[in-house]
Length: 491
Image (tube, one colour):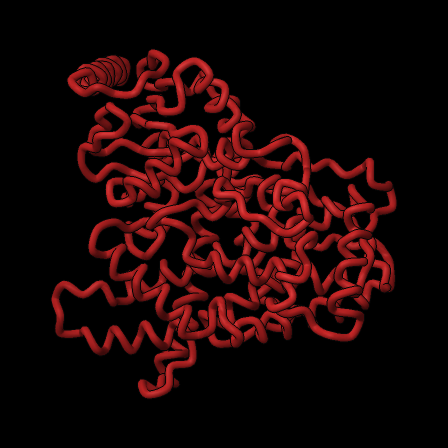
């Protein structure tokens, strides 16, 4: 009986808190939106397997700036290129806050580049961008690393002798080795068991946060913490990844030469030593571990998934694959390694790679932003502590910006003379001050790896082009492409 009474009292308290929260919101001129239900807010209006589609549908009623409640969390969703650009670019300073995504908060405890705000974020972002550039991101040195890794990839594909194989983890190993060179100062053998184990965890984490269980955790973390489920296993595996990073940091400490930093970790450790007597410094191990984890995970899964999706697209549209190969043959030939200098001479290839990114729409909801103070936007007042979702899906599929947004169409990036043309609505890396720090690296990897693969192989599958389904397997936090056995025929 006491337990029953306690339960009733808890529900009443929660109801009162909810009513107070909703009533308090009414003093602001919030953007319009559907009426929320107690506790669950507007969750019943969201499509479970692809919530971003529901946001797009709701915007037809409530406009491009709308308020929803995802559980307890007040959320403002920005729909379409105009609204997203106005917020993230035109009012960039107002929208630099990063949303406290519960899953990432638990993993990082608020430390590191990805989830931080304020001075911590400013110091870590400035340091990360500068350091990655120093070690070649977007420059010739990094290009040579990617070219070298592309040779390892081609040699591994050769071992399949034209037989079907799943490229998922092979591409993860390839792409991850590039970020490993930047962060750890080394590449790993494709057979390295520890490396493979870590990559398996990365894949499992991405699949989890893109699953209904991951969505549930981010909506009701306080409830999920007390319930059994796969999320507890995922968090344990993330601790294994953190232990791996800590091991690498310790190895760096033991061999550190302050006059000659080898990689990102060395540079961070040197900065820790330089600022050890500054009480307000953000350069300490609590920030180093999650920042390395951020770079490692983001630098592995998104790019490798995009390349894998690109191969599926080219198998589905063999005429596009053949046209790319003709262009590569005429510009580079069979023997030379592709370089970024070739890109301007390969407009159709460049257009296809851009269209692959647009069509996949890898992170449809973007990473959530957060209001660190009250914000005025388009005549509305968005209160402090509101989650902001810049719906990148609505930008990459904006019918005002793209001729055929729902079809794969390389002409989106070609002018009437078939020269490459930019489109301001191409924002797969987001925009503004929170845009992806690895954008230039990812662009370089996508170009060199895909051109190298198509220069040396023709891709197909045993069931034929019609068997390829380009609709992602998971579509929540990330659009995760479907997995296929593919055939790489040497050219």
